[in-house]
View 1 (spheres, helix red, strand yellow):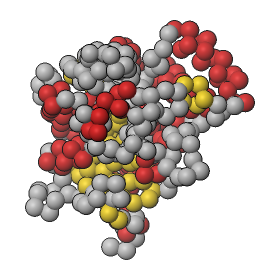
View 2 (cartoon, rainbow, N blue to C red):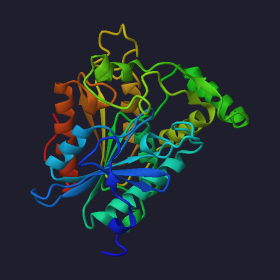
View 3 (cartoon, rainbow, N blue to C red):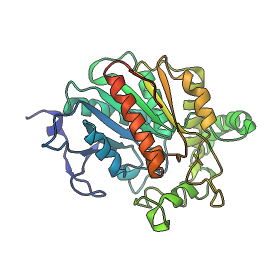
View 4 (cartoon, rainbow, N blue to C red):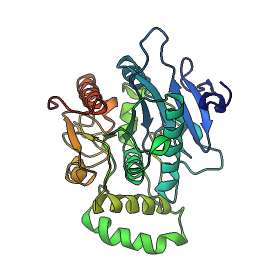
Length: 330
């Protein structure tokens, strides 16, 4: 139909995952979709996956799991990340999380246009979980295509800095004051043993593009750090997300080190205790899902924890978009 959201996007075969995945430019971001199979009933809801830092959408199994459960699946690679990264850009670098929130808003408007009348679920991981939370709060009173999500799933969200107290207080204030003079200066660098361990070539379970999810890590820069800490301060002050929220996390955190015997069974990126402490500050309807033995991206965990996460998350999501939760999550 001329003038429809479908007509406005130039869909093409996804150059990273291939058929049946498709991608389309969405301003400075990229929207990816897994077309809903024609031999299945029409979708009951739509979902948008939002990736984290040093990350992009590559989780084919996540798309197939949502689709099998009756969802129309989409993912957004935010500006300066994944499929959206341009040669002149610093990976994942933004000076304000509202820049990436604009990408989430554009994806939400587009998907609502493509899937009219369907509830919208946003499934957001790590830094994407922080940004999606701020977007959902900012759009809590909006209506129509600009409304916040009907349900928000936070997969190990980056709600606070995993660092000593002085770095989270004095160090943050110092960088917030002087950081504008050197926004691209590197303040943290080093390998991601977590990403290294996940990679199939290193004996892990997953295939991904190591130029877009780098085992050597992506340096953290002053301007990005200040943007993150401002967003986290807003969370600490309390949000009013209108939709139901699921905060899912591992049961423990540990060092991101190859000599950690629980490297494949802990969150080695963030502090799960911080997530638990901040969960009540997100809104009035927040549920926690704790997954024993899970890694930072719960959907990339070993089979047992991964299935526990996907099953529990889908159970909560369906109950939430139906308007109620029938029974507690195990």
